[in-house]
View 1 (cartoon, helix red, strand yellow):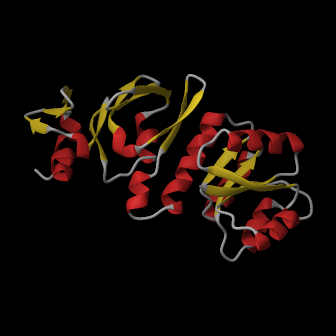
View 2 (view 1 turned 90 degrees about the vertical axis):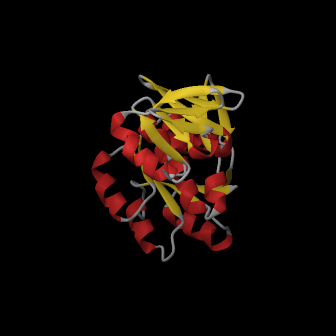
View 3 (view 1 turned 135 degrees about the vertical axis):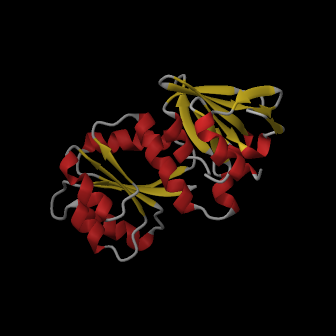
Length: 226
């Protein structure tokens, strides 16, 4: 469970983030603050794993607040001004959310925190959080057999269920353990652990035959150990 802190001087913005946090498994809201000084006070007494931090605030800006922290937790910047993006990333923030942002975009940012929040075997077992058909799901990465790209959508195939999400293949792969998943075709990426066998230019997973594209073949065979 990641403990998060909302820091934003706009009540509406805090309300939106509060709702997003409550709808996201593995997130626990520690507190919400109107300015950076309140946030400093909270962090003196509470453990915080991730901060949703607005940039334009009275007294002390989000950037100045971030620079003042000796050992900051993961930070996701939230602002209506895109010109601050570069400065934020120079400060090694996890992500940058440009207001107004959707719940799906919020989830992508949260998923980026996970690899730095856990380590070792825990990173491989951290769930993938997705939203589809108005519902939020936590999918254990070990259960994912392969990903199938269909235009602007990706179908996530598990042993018993499939989930269709509005996303791109590369974006989803960036949120999965790189050592466990590999692209084999422009339309397919597979979980190495679930490969039954490789023969010629095809991969067999759970009685499903998938093609290996020429562009991806050498890299796949090398990672697969062939």
